[in-house]
Image 1 (cartoon, rainbow, N blue to C red):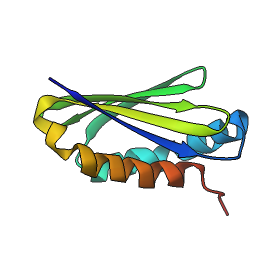
Image 2: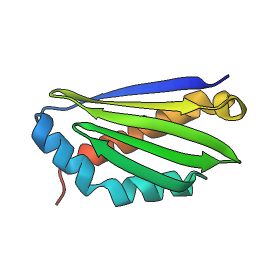
Image 3: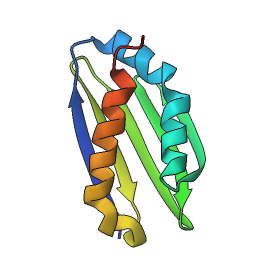
Length: 105
């Protein structure tokens, strides 16, 4: 059975600006997922929710980023084989999620 990992990242950007920043950082986000061993990464927006799918160690990983007025909520469903890495994944999501909405120079 899978294990959900959820991370909430506060921001003060408003929903529209936060979504723009997430969208602008997608290539970097996918590269980070790839460096963490996830392959075949696919994503799609549905209003203010970015859904994604990937494969890791032959397992399907699904998740989403909900862009809200005051925070991003990132949720990843880890399949049974990967559930033991939940805490490590949560830390990485928190780090990378923060980078998604940082001010770009």
